[in-house]
Image 1: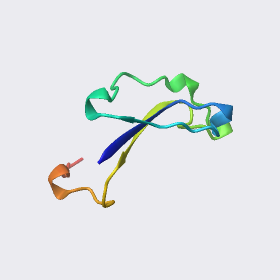
Image 2: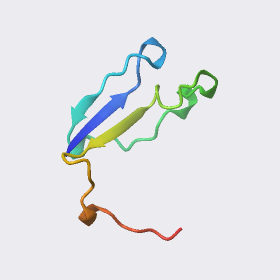
Image 3: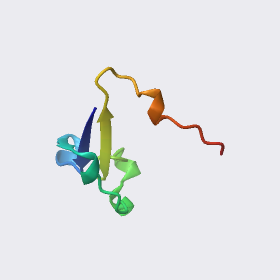
Image 4: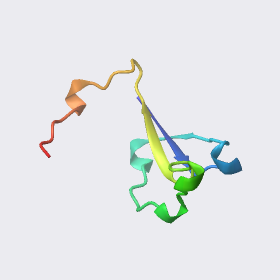
Length: 69
């Protein structure tokens, strides 16, 4: 499993740069939602978000839980 982070972007959201992070490096601080511009279709281009890339493309069942909402 690999964790990747994208913390903003340049060139109007078209210059995506991801970097690999360890689970301990994941930043849980509040996001700066005021930078999001829905009119320009840049919902996540300007804020930090993470990707989890699985080796086999499957999340092992031991990491899944069911929540009743």
